Length: 354
Image (cartoon, rainbow, N blue to C red; front, side, top):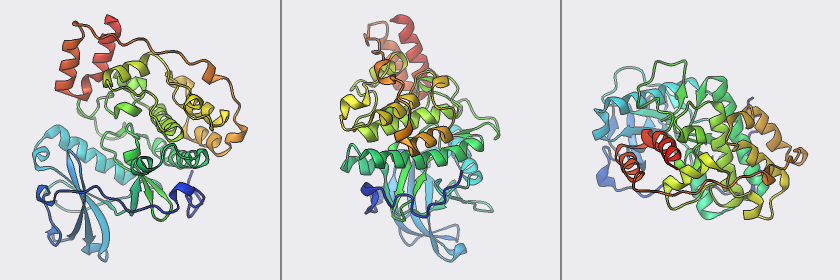
């Protein structure tokens, strides 16, 4: 399902003047600086960004005519962590096997590396997260178009057995050439690759605002999980709010397992009933009731005026009340201390204690 459009965002008004945006980075906290050369090949040009686990650098690839590339280097304290290293290797393996204009292109580095790092194409533009900070909600036509392009990338991944599992605004790049890229395969899963570690195979990982109920419950994620993640993202683009907003993260996770969000048109009265129908079908709690494929969802996004409205907005159920008790507090504390893999166990326990 490859696109034939050279500039697919040409008609998306909010993307006509995409800025190049980088978060400010403290240069004293990074492993390399402009002018340094990595492995006698990559000349560092600029520090692009720094996350909790890695630094992204812009560099010239002297082996490829000095073209610009991006290099992702994990922080030193994570390089010796076997679980993180396995996840980092898996991200590169998955990235190298995908080849689609809307998916970040990974560049293979042959030979021994002096330290772990990943090389990809260098992109000019900003993330969807940055756009949503400046404009929310997005115009309906624009939001549906962006979601349609993401569907193309998802279908390619799914055709190759890859489930992204962490679609969110920070992982979608809006490029100055009017295309998009899906990025960050750090928790992506591919059953055709080697067996994953227990940490790497945790099904409960993801970003809370966009996680599917099966991710919260620790169940196995499949292509329909990505459809839910995209549906949650589309909900945010169209309404300006994530589906389950609560200052208490655990209450929000509990809500998506036990109920439904507010109908989109109650938050944005300008939306069409058809756009609301698409969103609500994508974020059905039961995976079997979602779109069966990204291709099917794209078909409706591209012809939204023909979507049959089935009344999903009138069938939404209120989430069960969140009532933390003294019995629950140790579980919450344990999850906070031990991290995302316990989220599913926590929610199941809370449901039993409810």
